[in-house]
Length: 389
Ligand code: DNO
Ligand code: MN
Image (cartoon, rainbow, N blue to C red; front, side, top):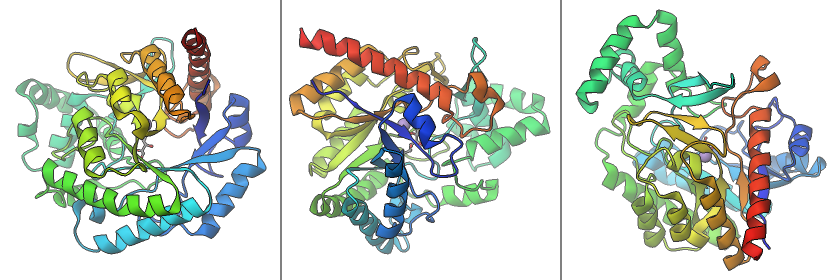
């Protein structure tokens, strides 16, 4: 029976969670990126091998690259985009030359994942990441002051945002802005002015043109990946719906079938992130696992709990709205069908126990993810028994 490969995201030598900690959590694979290389620039074989040696010295394996970030000019297909695509292809070939089997990336305009609070208190005292529409509207309308922002929210949300804005202290507003603009961990924080400038780049780009830009990019990099022998895994939009007036094209089943058909190359695949996809009630996750099938190259397993307004927090891995039993069962069935093991990582976890006293990367503290990994490992063992029968 094929088991999933247990992996762990590690931010490199500066990560407060060490490789020894990772081993104690029971993971065997590492998911990492060269965060010191500037956005858009080439990952050299030398730099990749240096990181690889650090990982292997601890008896671990570099299983997945997450992420080689995609430059804004590629997403907008403007300026030096051709040059950036060539650089990206070189990084892809170099990662392949170093025998790393999978590369993850995303195609979210401007920001990576977006939340409005990084310390939403759970009833047990642990802290979770949280997304709230009213807070996003407060940021958008009153802090960012984006043109036409008011009209992009329902009247109900806009009214609540006006009220909340009046009640928030200066400190609360600053904290909110920091969280929404945090972008990819490891990147320096931007100002609202910079963010408005970035949003402006998308003024004439609707979902259809962003989709075209994505397929153009995928066609280019898939060829490089296929020749050099590495798989690509696109991470879904998080959250999986448009925010801040930006288009989104990696959010739902029809998005996946579009680009997987259009760029029909076996290396062109998906990082199936249950936490991201599960934040939309429209996504049927076990069905999506079946439909995407062998094009799933990597898994992020975590959970979310939504309310009627579409706000959500990151729940315990086996709690929340995602039916993890059904999802993992589909994944295991898929693995037996295609005779392979997919790498998964517990994605985010709650900040809990001793980690509450520590400075951690949001979502990436040790103990919460250790708990998630252990729970999923147990779930897998149980399900494999039922599949054998
Ligand atoms: C959120 C995280 C993301 C992810 C990148 C992949 O769920 O997993 O930060 O790593 O979007 O490119
Ligand atoms: Mn994810």
